[in-house]
Length: 146
Image (cartoon, rainbow, N blue to C red):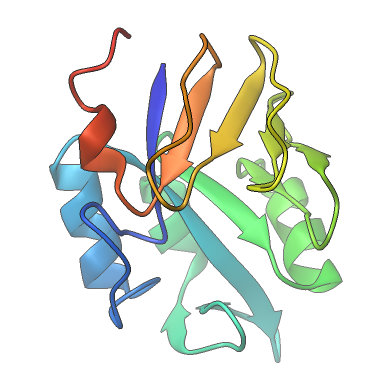
């Protein structure tokens, strides 16, 4: 099962969410990371509600096996697809298909399949054999069956 840190969070929300150093710490701790990616003025940025942290394509490519990139605008989605970066688009949808064929499931949905990545921001969602779980409290799942 994929254990995915939501924006770099491991033990709860933080004001460091989506910052490159915070993302790297989550990866170094053994987790995949869901990040929010923008393309603005032909450059990549990280940030939830707006572009905050400027990064380059190399940042995404070097970590590509561990990132689940949430495209925050159409340019970011198109550019990441062109560069074969694992990404998805989800706004208010219950489900989104990632570029690797996983079903990223909104936090308000409780139905899941073996291809689902369940978003459990509180860390309390029951895990019933999904492909992965994404949480601000992902450390709670570290000892779950993989």
